[in-house]
Each structure stands twice: as C-alpha cells, then as structure tokens.
Length: 67
Image 1: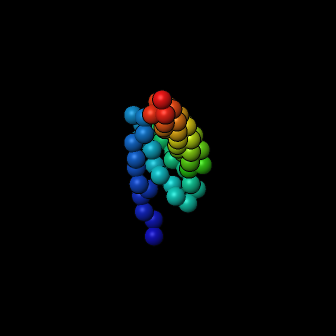
Image 2: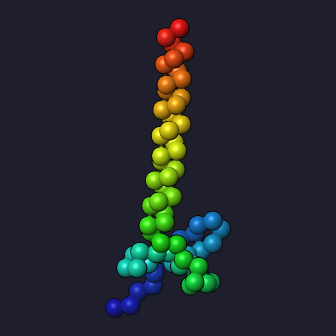
Image 3: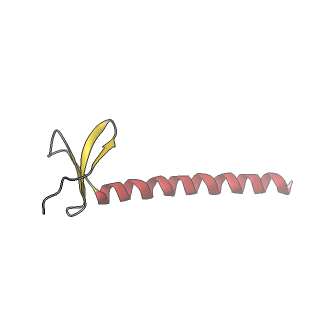
C-alpha cells in the first residue's frame, strides 16, 4: 500500500520526512536533503554547548558564595 510521506516545516521550507531512508527531502527540490544523522549531530552540539554554559554559570555562582 502506497501512502504519502509526512511533511514538516524547517527553516521556512517544507520537507518530506522519509523514515525508511532516514532523511528529510525538500518538497520542491529532492536534492535538498537533511539526514536524520545531521539533525542528531546538530542537536548533540547544541546540548553540549548548553551544558558547558550551565556548568560555567553554576561554577561561577559557587565561587561567589564562597567569599
């Protein structure tokens, strides 16, 4: 049975979400694609930066309380 791929919006573009190939393909340009792995890597990078900033803030707050 053939079914339509779900559509999602990212960065003001509409993409098909293809779970089988693990990628998003632009509706108007199938060569414009983003793999799920690229999304995972971007997410992990953001989480890593946020974790670093949070820990730096906590360390700074602890130092201020010591004095």
